[in-house]
Image (tube, rainbow, N blue to C red; front, side):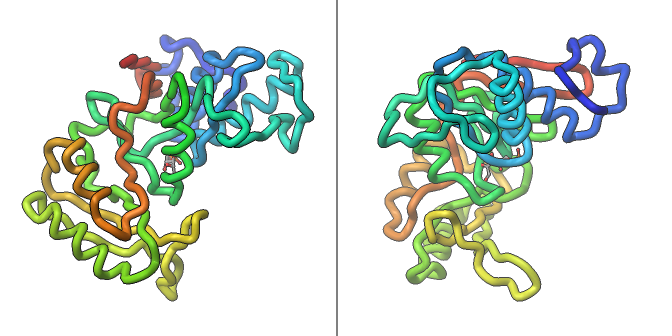
Length: 241
Ligand SMILES: O=C[C@H](O)[C@H](O)[C@H](O)COP(=O)(O)O
């Protein structure tokens, strides 16, 4: 589907939609939350990309206005040093649980996103319905932990031991045939944790992970999302905290 604007929810079931179409529909819906002059936090990934494209287009059309010089897409860039309070962040996620807790970072970005999204007044998450899980880790896919390179095997083993009861397996994230370690935009490695069962209390799990020296940050975004927009075959669902 060539989506210009998202279709009304009732129309979605009459079309064959790809996963990328659903991501675009969720992203365009989130852009409706933006007002001129807001300080925005924009994430990375295939879903957030649609939101960034849409914002760029609206700026170029003059439908959203800013007071600053436009950069490549017409979106002026800043950082938390200059704008410590962000009005609205829009970003994708890898998992969303029923309480709107998230897993992020399967694309390699979690630390900077957590800093920005932790500083925002509203955090709107955009996902297609494949991202919904019953519990964090429930997809069977990775929960990433960013660690410093020094003695990463030691850190990985401590992480795995922490969640032994949940059948945790910790793996260094690698790239390509040579299996070179993936290096984050902060120069760190990522240890991906795979769980066979729920890890239970997420806050307690978070605290335990962060207490390990060598851990920089993890990909659980607990109690941070204020709204989650889910696009599925049957339409759009907006879940609010
Ligand atoms: O590491 C990447 C970010 O956390 C992304 O927001 C997350 O992986 C979701 O990406 P996508 O929208 O491509 O599924």
